[in-house]
Amino acid sequence: MDKLSKTSLNYLLSEYLEDLKRSGVQDFKRAPRASTPSRLASRPSDSTARPEPVASPPSPSPSAPSRARRDASSPESSVGGDPRVAELRLISEQVAQCSRCAELASNRTQTVFGTGDPHAELVFIGEGPGAEEDLRGEPFVGRSGKLLTDMIEKGMRIPRSSVFICNIVRCRPPGNRNPTGEEATACRPFLDATLKVVAPKYICCLGSIAATNLLGVESSLGRLRGVVHSYGDAKVVCTYHPAYLLRNPSAKKDAWQDLQLLMSEMGLPR
Ligand code: URA
Image 1 (spheres, rainbow, N blue to C red):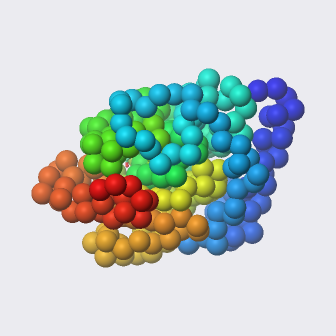
Image 2 (image 1 turned 180 degrees about the horizontal axis):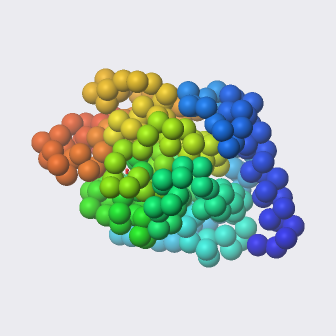
């Protein structure tokens, strides 16, 4: 990226952070616990310029609801100048430099920003990277990730590459413990900035950490499931975390119901 575009991207991110401040986040470095934000304001005009897909889906699958496919994690996807790829890369650079959570920053191999289609209509949010994700720098690549891929590709019948996947926190909590509220709050501006760029129509929260943190509620997953919530302009469906499903396979039928709710909201064939 040349100097000029880097400068303008820095300007864009600072604009996002200004927006976050206006919606209640006072200081990027000292963000309070987030509640449901006013919105993810509407996208700038780049939303009309949909780039052609550059990556083929992993398997021959029915057409995805995606607006176009570009993987924010692959460097070549910025060829052609998709502004969302560049914007996400800028946020991921900020994430990589973050050291707000001392314990997480000192224990991580690397940050795990997120991956997928910057134009995805659907974003999955998990809780935080596990051991394998920490090593590989990508979300949901371990056993839970395999199950998530099956949920997306075999269950919903859309390619995993057509969605965007990220987590509430971008560093692995040591020993795979749950992220604390403070850690989730510290990482929240990155989540909000990511969602603002991708501007999904649908969000699927995987597990109660993702659901309660995103929605800013203190409710059980049982109460949050089966209802379509909203987050800004996006419709939100909550389901079990794939790691829970691996430990409790009998809950898979309930998770399938959640996915069917999501699919019917998205207008996908069931
Ligand atoms: N569990 C999560 O919540 N996120 C990951 O990326 C991997 C496992």
